[in-house]
Image (cartoon, rainbow, N blue to C red; front, side):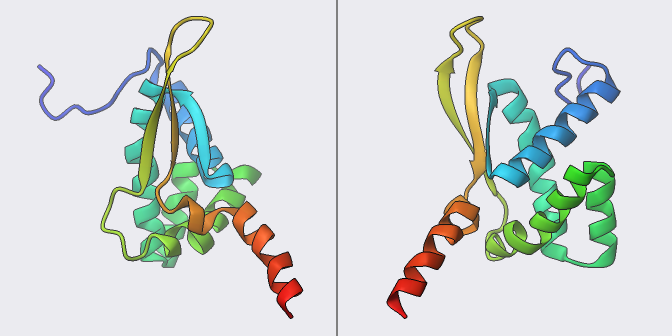
Length: 141
């Protein structure tokens, strides 16, 4: 019976699945949106939202937990800093539902259902938006 077992296996063993979710979450934090299959996006959403909850808490223990969940490589270190400095403060007044999944249709090669997963507050936290706003502010001065 499947009582209280929520893990989507994605046809991978545990270590491969954990590595996949770590890499997808780090890419989501780094690039603000990721295009992947629908099953992977649905598996990534609770993982990413728990990371934002840790980021909203913003203490030493939650930083260490986020590093543990994301891994200890350089991408994970950068992603943790971005999570705590940009993404979590932008979602401070939101009580959950930090990610959105947009269905794209089927992939051409194997007809796998594709989706985009992104932050709901992506416009606020997008690095492109802040980079574009800086020249406009200089032009006004």
